[in-house]
Amino acid sequence: MGALHPPLPRPASPARPARLIALLCIAAALAATAAETWRWSRAALHHERPALLSHQGTPVSGVTELSHAIIPMPEGVPSAHASSLASLPDGGLIAFWWAGSRESGPDVKVYASRWSNGKWSRNWEVASRDSLGRALGYGVRRIGNPVAWTAADGTLHLYVVATGLGGWAAARIVQMQSHDQGATFTVRRVLPMSPLFNTSTLVRSAPTALADGSWWLPAYFEIGHKYPMLMSFDAHGDPQRLTRIGTRTQSLQPSLVPVSPTEVRAWMRDDGDSRRVQQAVSRDGGQTWSDLEATALFNDSTALAVLRLANGSLLMLHNREDIDGSARSALTLSLSTDARNWRPLIDVVDGEAGDEFSYPAMYVVGDDLHITYTYQRRAIAHHQYRINLQNNLQKEMP
Amino acid sequence: MSLPDLALQIAYGRLAWALVAAALLLAVLPAIAQRTRLFIVAAMMVLMLLPGAASPAYWLVLAFQYPSGLLAGCAVVSLQARWQGRRPRFTLPAGLALGLAAIGLLMYLDTFGVLALGLYYGGFNPVAAPLLACAAAIGFAVNVWRGHAAGPSAAMLIAVLLFSLLRLPTGNLWDALLDPLLWSWALGSSIVAAKRMLAARKTQRRQEMEPEPAPEPVLAAAAE
Image: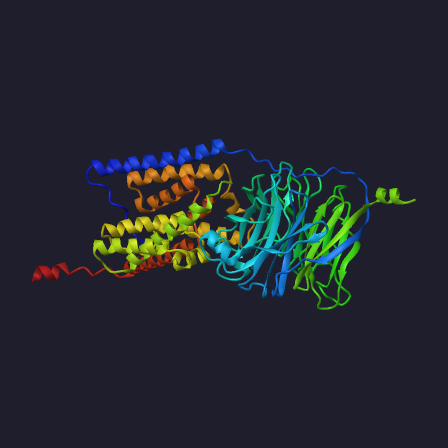
């Protein structure tokens, strides 16, 4: 292309062209300054403050299963993976996942199903590479993990991994939104996450609520080194800040949980040799992050989910090491009251060697804990549990 | 964080890739008539505006997303130079090339996780990024006005204006000034500049080491 050199010739006479260039330059500088000043004068201050549920202090004694089911899958589609749960403004629950002929297949689409009155609805298609390509004005090669979040105003936000040229290393994150409880979605934007053609960033874990109705979206980078990130959004779903979580290069898919007004913890899938759940901490409300020593919990590069209950206890749903050495054949629900020590509550599922029960998601509605996970890479399984607090049990005793 | 509207990004993607493609074509083609140049630019615009997968922009944005504002600016300046009949030069000016290559190296090492500086995230900073953009706009406008490195300054000014007025291409100041394609060009230009510098030094050294021509024997000449 070149031609930046030699320089543009200066006009020989100080007549019209020179005056025109001077005017254009002054106008350009003024326009840039005016635009920035105008934008700055309209910008709302965004203070991120972790939302903490009221701490009731009543310990969890256990959970009781109320139901389990397989969410209705699209017909003739053999592969399904990576579910995500969100609440609906009417009190229901909605699940998203991707399904198709195989992972990364061109026919993979994101599907949704609604949970109400104890049943899952028929699934419907939410996004495909064709629908995203039409909305974005350029091609999308593959569709991947969906992550859902319901804003305080009832808008349902869906983040979907969509790749450019290449595999998951070329992944970008598309932000979609729905104003009709997930029936239809419109594409809002592709999140700008990396300077490498905006590639290699993905989502998996559920967002975390902040005090003013805004939220954090956990994300991760995964080309060569793998590291966790977070993007914060205001209550309207506009991105506010992007940052890396810690400095490790072998952990991904962070689950973020505030444990005090200033302390936030991140638990992550391990992609290294330690085979332990990785963790990081922020002591300034998520602004800066430090790595912590890995937990004692087994993790052989499998996704996990963590959430905080109303009583302050933490639940982690993760694959445990099975006696047959399988990394993904057993899913365990563990409990912690101090974010440091974890004890197993129940095995949600325990299969045989070669079975896969992975990519768990959790959501609490009232006293009920909803769990979804990938069932043998063929479907999405759902379990509903009642969370038992110790005083509840005492009340129930004769 | 202030991000551009998706519709604006789609329009920018098509226009910017059309400019880059036209500038590349005009740079590699031999001297051609003014009318042909105009035709090439118009043809690129029409091609990029084709709907869906028929548009090359559909595939270019799939692979590379949007060219940085600076790459688009370089294309505009290059087109203007060709329009005036100047010969294309395939390397960036050494100062600009070295600067971009060094910043890009840091940025990409940071992005790949080798460093943990958070450089890219700083491009969204609601205070620093707009302030830098304003300062850059004023600085480059003065440069263009005074004719100091007018070509690179004009390209930079276009990039900063796109960022400040419309937040294009992504809302991140770094994306306005750098992209991997531009970085590769800057890296190549830096290598060429370094080679040229080494060659010039060698020539200079050789000249210094060559023995000075022996003075003519004055007496002999006088005797003749």
